[in-house]
Image 1 (tube, rainbow, N blue to C red):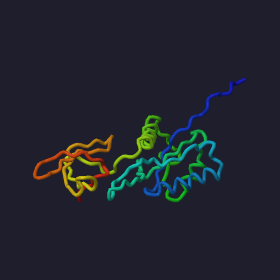
Image 2 (spheres, rainbow, N blue to C red):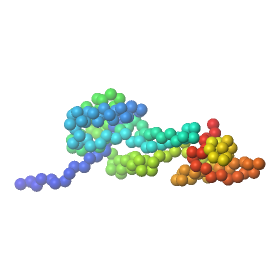
Image 3 (spheres, rainbow, N blue to C red):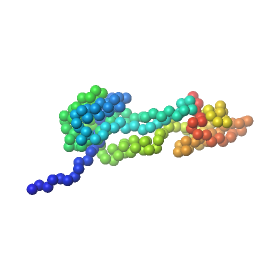
Image 4 (spheres, rainbow, N blue to C red):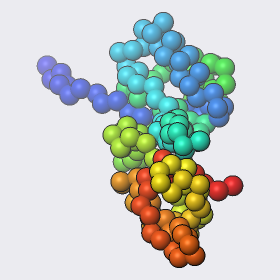
Length: 188
C-alpha cells in the first residue's frame, strides 16, 4: 500500500504585472475574488510591496507609503492549486496585465521573495525613511528654536538620531548648531 505523503505544501510567491498606480485597488478586487470563490485555502496572501517614507513640509512630518515595486502585486499561493482557471480569473480583473510566466505562473525564487518581503518588514519596523534626505553641503533655513530664520550649510547628517550639524554665520563667524530634522527646511 503506497504511503501517504505527510509534508505540507509550502506557498510560493508569484508576481502579477498590473497597471502602475492601481495596485491597491487591484489588490482589493483580488482579495474580494479570493473570498467570493473560496480560494482562501490556497491563495494565502495578496501584497502590494510598500515602504513608509516621510517628507517635512512646513516643519511638519508628513508620512506616506511608497510602492517598492510600482506596477506589481505579489501573491502567495500553493503551486499545485494555481490552475489555469484561477490564473484566468485573476488576469481578467480590470487593470491586471499578466502573471510572470503568463498562463503558467513562475514562482519567485525564495531568496528573491524574502528580499522583497524583508524590505517591507524592515520598513514597518524601522518606522519611516526620509523621502528627500538631507545632504552634507546643502543649504537649509532654520524654522524653529533660537536660531530661527538663520540660513546655514549642513556639515553632518545623523539619519539614526534625525539630527543635523549646521554651520550658521553669526556676526560673520561660522558657528556649529545641532538641530533636529523638524527644525529646518530645505531651501528652494
